[in-house]
Length: 470
Image 1 (tube, rainbow, N blue to C red):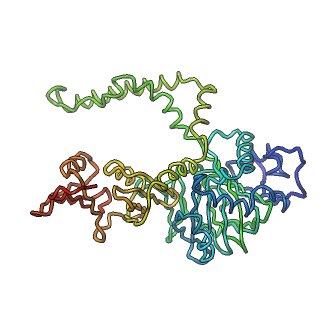
Image 2 (spheres, rainbow, N blue to C red):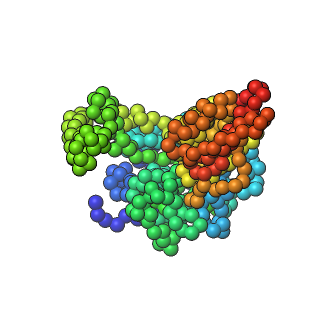
Image 3 (cartoon, rainbow, N blue to C red):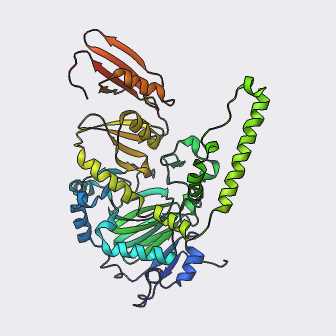
């Protein structure tokens, strides 16, 4: 579709009372123009009538929601990003509702999700918009409250960002086109202006995922009450309150098409022995020569490739497959995370947190879960943060993802165990774990000196006296 499409359009008045949810939101644009010219393509700022969201979600609704944080399983995070701080995105830290007022007084933005659990009108709007847009992927709703000058520094999201300004004003600076169309994850600009992806090691980021950031080319819009801003996935943006700001954000994440198709045929392929057996062994005596073995492995892969192609071609592209996509994305990722966090958070009385620097927070969390049975308490993927339970009551582990991991020295986590040999066997069996060393102190106990996958030092201790152990 060709033409000149303005960033900002102004509504001369309210939409018709019988207008659909989408028509009301993008008025005065025709919904079909929005779908074909803007949706997932370019940013759109709609200046709407100031009072059109007055009964959608209010400060009173937000206070009521936060008072029911545990009941509703809400995640509340704070960010210290502000004007004049250099522009690098800071960490988002989860807090309790009782702590919010103090953070606001000292200077911070508040994000509450999945706020649709406490806001039926917002939940209904998100549902109707999803249906009208024909969106098959995830949807989620967050609420943002920011004092003057605070908000979020330059970053982009892997989903469509749709912000409804409820009260106050917020200044947005944004790229006119996506920096990375449909990125594989959220990213932000670090203090040096480089692109950093959350939850991913730098070595996994491909050249096309590292666009040059040119802030001087960004557009600026000021959102007031009744305004809407819709950004395609991958659009660079920052947002800071002017005076104060209350807004809700309805996000639309794309379906993982590759995962959907391969997942649909995976179960059938796994029933076949050839798909479970691995490659033919590299045995020169049995295969003749290494070259013959290589040809055998190549032929084996060629057979599997043809089977995969046949299965994909035979896959019915019907309502069942689309229903599977919708079912897989029911509710927001934040809602699912908060659901896991609610029970774990109530079960663990967190009195001490040991923070470890890691290269990949998700990989480190998986390692600690596999090795020590740690469970996720909170996860903030946007900023590489995961908090875990530990085997010790009252102690949690914080995994903080940084570009340079493997920091040595400092604190050592020391776990008392029931069976040191079993612990040693478990560590040795895991190929990602560095070798451990055992030593003994007569009359005291035995010690296993180990490391996690990022080089953080660990100690496992079994006493000699037979006293009760963890």
